Image (cartoon, rainbow, N blue to C red; front, side, top):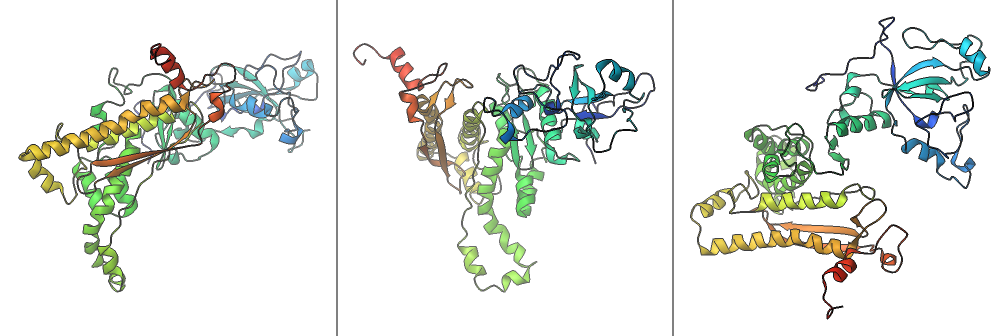
Length: 452
């Protein structure tokens, strides 16, 4: 069953004359015809792009060497990419402009009338109007994909719930959510992020930081239900119910919490597994089952952050590290640590209720370690980040961060950072508009004459 948004689904476009609903399509800029003397300019087609014939789609090998990616330039640089549009009328591609205006017509419900002499395999050029009111001539309206369901108008938080998952419906859902300041969208366990290029607050709550400490603690344990459902661990599902069964908006903290909870759940599974043996006699018959249960191995977790330059990978990495450092911190408000359901939880409570000097020293050392992990980011960025044409703080190297946890207490006990594929040529040569690594400018700005 579809869950309607707060505003409800968008009303279908209706023709004012006939009162019939018009069919809407996802606009494809690659179908836009080149402007000519007898037609208006097409706003979606950039100037200087390669002309396109109405009925023949150019192959990459047929493109001019001067414009090797002209097709992609037309498609991805258009602000109208996959925007909803309606067909105004068909265009007669064989007659003159004056003749075509007399012979072409549209029905009252927005569905163009077909010429009985034309073949069903011939392209049907048409005049379409996008939802922002712009008019465009396209080569073949039959190649447009229609909007078929109310979910196409909602911008739902998980695109896998779309009735028809296509490139057009997915990108349009991201556009709708981006306009609502919802920069995170799920595709099952995958989180898609669109860089907002501005400080973010909680949608609908002006002034509340999207990455505040309160938000961090709100997402702690919120993914236990997801982990329990996917791993068959009923104890984790019970933890989610005990936490109130929270359903929260898509967020980076969900990804971090899912990895952290999955790590600790592999330890809890050792206690849960014997109860499952009674329900599965075949498992008990295995000779090495008992040995496997004794030698239970913790399952390491990975978070992969990828994207093009300027997509927000560096910031996402820092936010995830801040989240892990905060939820594992102890002694601040008693809300840190690994969460309920672990074997050492009772021991932790006893230590917290009657702390001594040794306990304080351990907590101070743990907090200091977490701070050191976070404080390493600015140093790495100084030596490995530089300004590019797309991004003022672009990472010019690959980074693998390994964080180790104590599975009894859930706290961070160590971390290591491996760097690879550093762009060494940038030290001696930069293209116009780009800069060298930050560290050189920082040295010239802050060092005294003796150092220089």
